[in-house]
Amino acid sequence: MTFPIALIDRLAADSVLADSVQLALEHHLFDHLQASLSARQLAKRLSWHADPTAHLLELLWSFQLLERQPLDGSLYYHTAPAVRPYLCRDGERYMGDAWRYRLQALRGFGQQLAEMLKQPQPEYSEQLPHDAAWAAAAGGQIAQEQRALTADTACAIAATVARFNRPARMLDMGGGPGLVSAALAQRYLQLSGVVQDLPLTAGVAQGHLVAAGVDDRFSAVSELAADDRFDIIWCSSFLHFVADPAQTLAELYQRLNPGGVLISAHARLGDDPQQVSRVLPFFLPLLMRGKHVFHHDRLMQMLTDAGFRVEDRGEQPFPMAPLHVHCAFREEKS
Image 1 (cartoon, rainbow, N blue to C red):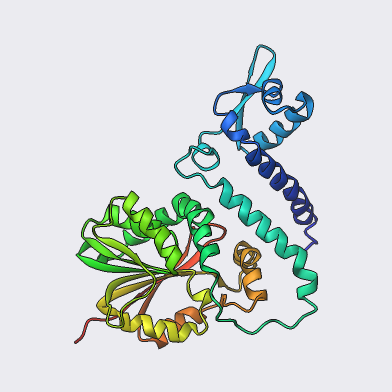
Image 2 (cartoon, rainbow, N blue to C red):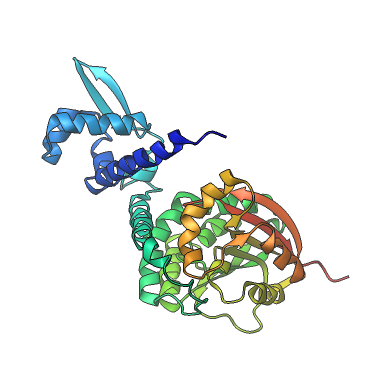
């Protein structure tokens, strides 16, 4: 194998692209370009200079974030139709703020990496995230990510799970803004259930359930009753943060009614370098801080050990990186 010079060069170039997209979002460039403008016209709106503005637009066009067409001797640019729902502020799937947050978080981690390598990896901490901060994230970037992608992925997975086609009660474990539950409830009118998260975050989720018109069937809570049972449990990126994932899975097994299903979606690191490269850059901060990121078939083994019959659904698209999905069934009583 030859040294991947092109890959190393691409990493450096990608930092320029990331800075360019961040600047474009900060100045609402994609919003301005919902109508075609020349570089000179856009520069005038933003108090920039025309020539460097033209270079920036060419870069964004080269990555298909913009489209262009010649007119009267000038090039006119507009936001690509596929991009508008995600990067224009009035788009129904707008995720510009979430993307900027993730970029800053990952860059902040990178700046701390040298010091982290000089310290032993911390032991797992059971300390929960600050409720107010988590609620703000649930109302901001996490909500944007659930609208942009997670809710659609959840509905696509649900379409392959027969239990959704009958009356069922669902638990959205650590459900954050609750938009996954809202989307599923809108699609499956016989579905009811709860979103569980920290108290202030549950308040954010309740607001989203009301806005979606499903609060007659779904509610958000901060604690579950000891005897609460469910037919479906949605568990996405929750096990990364618990002290003992195996014990948590055993507890979730007990919360499932016989014939019920736990849908697990979590990061997985395997033996394929290309697969790991899609996941590890986003989850390295968790590993370095003592949280759980599952290797190989470890999560499947824990599900099996907890008593589940497991179906491996492979990687599915989620914000940041693909997650590995397992459908884990509690068998009917014989």
